[in-house]
Structures are given as structure tokens and as C-alpha cells.
Length: 187
Ligand code: IMP
Ligand code: MG
Image (tube, rainbow, N blue to C red; front, side, top):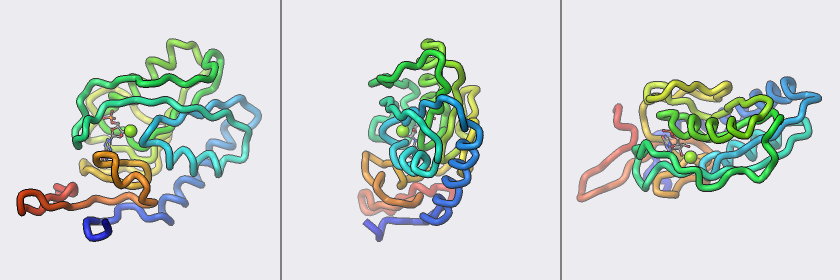
């Protein structure tokens, strides 16, 4: 697996530093408040886990499953809400946590579905922000890193469901029909 890594964009240490800083900011903001953190599955699992571990306030945690990528590096544009959170959403402060905001379609659709339930507030935290790719009018309230228009994996982000377990963010290369392909296509 290691021989396919093209470039490590964010190391374990860099990620940990940013995640801790964000956790501190959120702990301050939601101190003495009711907070429900909703992790988007599957990509948001590692970021959400590390983030809530560093937050020293009481939070309720729930999960929501969406689907938009169909084994490709391009979004289908159509976002399916596979599973809504089980928690009560009405009158709650909600923090949506995901791995990356790319086109923005996923977060927009998730936010719409949550707003229908009349929460008190909704904020969005993502690890990565890819602003060049945005096609809808939505921005995250918090992000750890901005990334250019390259396909990245690791730390929850996948290619065909692989690489999610790697603790850093990287681009990779693979061989196809004797051709070397690379996700860092800006190179
Ligand atoms: P959006 O709906 O286009 O904003 O994309 C959101 C979802 O697409 C994310 O939650 C990821 O699962 C996936 N995604 C977008 N860009 C990347 C990437 O560079 N690598 C891996 N997954 C990505
Ligand atoms: Mg995802």
C-alpha cells in the first residue's frame, strides 16, 4: 500500500494540532449549552472521533448516512440520505461533522433535512475545504485545512472504500493498463 502514496499533504501531527485547536474553540463556544454532534458516515468517522475526544464538554453524539459517490472520484450530484440521526433534533444546537466539503451538495442536502426538524442552531465543521469545486452556495462554519482541486484520501476519506484507515491525508498513484495514474493531477 505504501508504494502507492504520491504525496502526504497533512501528517498525523499537523492534523492533530488543527483538530485540537478546533475542539478547544468549539468547547468554548458550546460551554454550558446543549450540543448534538452529528457525524456523517462514512467519511466523517475519524475526524468526528478525534474531535469529540478533545472536547471537554458534555455532548450527545449521533450519526447520519449519506451517499453520493459511486466508486468514482467525481460526485454524482445526487445526494441520497440513507439514514437520518435517531436523536431528537427540534430545538437542539447541532454541529454537523464531515470529512470534506467539495461540491457542497452533501452538506446542503444534509442541512436541508435537519432544518426541517426545527433545530435551535446548525453549524458545519469539516476537516477539509475544497472551495474551487463548490457548485452550490454553502460554506462550512469551521474547517481545518483548505485543499486544491485534487483527490485526496486517508483519515476517513476513501477511494472505492479503501485508504479510510490511514491516519494522514495523501494523494496516490496506481497503474492502469500499464499507465501510471495519479490523483494529484495538478502535477
Ligand atoms: P460534495 O457533496 O461534493 O461536497 O462531497 C462530499 C463527499 O464527497 C465527502 O463527504 C466525501 O465523501 C467525498 N469526497 C469529496 N472530495 C473527496 C476527495 O478528494 N477524496 C475522497 N472523497 C471525497
Ligand atoms: Mg463522505
